[in-house]
Image (cartoon, rainbow, N blue to C red; front, side):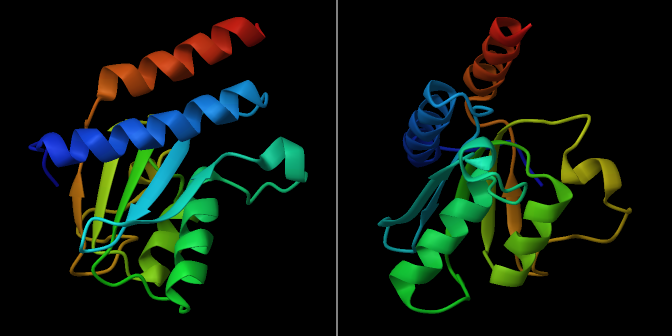
Length: 153
């Protein structure tokens, strides 16, 4: 895992932040995700929809992965990158691994429910060839989450 990233990562993370803002506007926890293919095309987008769909599995990552698989016409997303505003939970990390995404780019960490809380040393939820880049636009991603929960309290 590393924290080095470039302007391409910032560009796609800003699109994920747009999805997160859409979630907040709908009263959902503001997490957004986009999946990008190896040519830089956005093939899937999603934001949390657990409340509107009455479905605890309707996380941003799951929505984006499903949309990307539909776009490609297959369940494997080899060579694709997932951008997500908050570290995935263990459920989403499992789906990321099963879909064979090769790169995961996260914004803010999730010290309470993120996959890294349950991941054992030397083991990974993700595909063995996957790489992780953390902290892309971390402050903006974390600020959106904080603002949402302050408004709810």
